[in-house]
Length: 497
Ligand SMILES: [Zn+2]
Image (cartoon, rainbow, N blue to C red; front, side, top):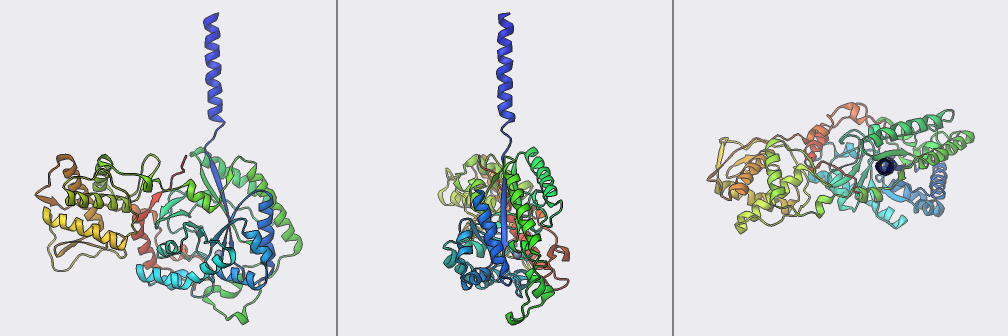
């Protein structure tokens, strides 16, 4: 009897443990963001204020990505009340003039890396400064107008102090969850984890709740993560988008000819506000947490930057680089191909200088190459390199990375150049030999690098650039080529415990 009682106690204790385990499901975060952009219809100001205040009242903080011209218009119209309501939320940036031609992807379509970065900054920085002046903060996040995405925006955004890329389109992404790209946290290409309730009354609310439940359940089943929800305040008040009315298919009328979009009947607007408020309350009641871009930046912080990488870490990377050049996930952090490139180059260069592997190596973030590799002219394709020649290339690559903060377009070994991928695979093999035998090899066998990280970047096609504001048939092969090169910086973003 006594033994049975003990067993019973044990079973009860175990099932209690199991229950507490089951009742702590993986965390699901919901990020709610508003592209706050209509600087034509004054009713949009009131809609913006009403949304910001309703959310504050319900204890929910959202991210309002504000167009520079919208911020200036609020100031000119004396809407300090709208500005004050918005200030209680995260402030993001949504370009300087949004749909006025040429839009971001149009003016960057033929630009290279450095000139494109400079051009984006030249055209867009004023809006950031105006937001700083009007809202008293540097915008934490940015997202492109429409689908006007471009890789060159990333380094320029970092230069302007913006930390998170928050938007939705299909250009680049990993498994519909946050990721790192271009040295920034991206909440982008969230597709199956994007939820929107229609604002058209009728069964909108129940359908929105069903849609949320479905996404929520599937995200919980895969271990938690983030749900993205976006709107534009103007959706509550207008019958047609403010910019489609004026800037459709490349049109660019002067301000004197801008037309106001149609205004929704008051009853429709009221119903949309009422439904949305209930939708927010419903989401709150589902045991999820609303988070802003600032909170996401810390929830998904890049812990690789806090680590020191020792010999075993580097040997692992050296072996992996010979097989495939893509991102890799570890316990609590991830490394992009550019991270591996930086760590192995830095450690190998230090080994050459000091005659011993450094006890630990820290990570420096690099951008990807600026142009696709083309082999150097007039030289032979060597299958091996003398060690001193390759050693010199390692030193030079380390110096290049320190100067330009990006992966070189080509690595010179004497008068012959090799691609960054071949260099990394070759370096991996040399590093492995050095690390395991402690000996410098007499020569280094050339390896072929298999760069696959760009499989997460979309192919250029007119469908990718589906935005009514673009000229008919617009697409941008050069932008997508740069996007593939910048996939060197791509890696998953991991939720920190
Ligand atoms: Zn927009």
